[in-house]
Image 1 (cartoon, helix red, strand yellow):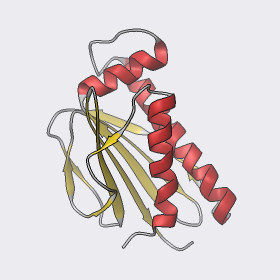
Image 2 (cartoon, helix red, strand yellow):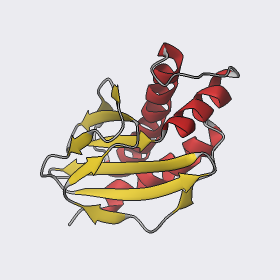
Image 3 (cartoon, rainbow, N blue to C red):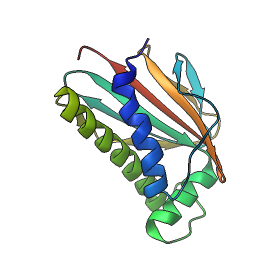
Length: 158
């Protein structure tokens, strides 16, 4: 079972940054739940890992319309293609901000020395995302533009 003290800052930051940066209010389809298995991508996914006194990664997956709306909110421009460089840049930036905000909270509280690695992003509907066998939690969400999934995996000592 995953340590909720280490994952709660990520979930909190996810909800806040989606609203502040992306202009999207998150509506939960349920509670944060432990997850062990593979995910089927909604269309565009970004992931960033972190390391320090413990390690892990965060994954943000969403439908195309959500990605386009976030990018429009950040840049003030409309986009049609989720592979547009600005769309990809906006999504990695929001993920970096979510991760950075959560790591700051954890570093302040736990003196964990955590740092983010560069994010990766990929596109494609129904792509299977295999999650390594490390504890993770998932939050299934939706907004007026589509579905969003947020997953946090953490392993190692405090």
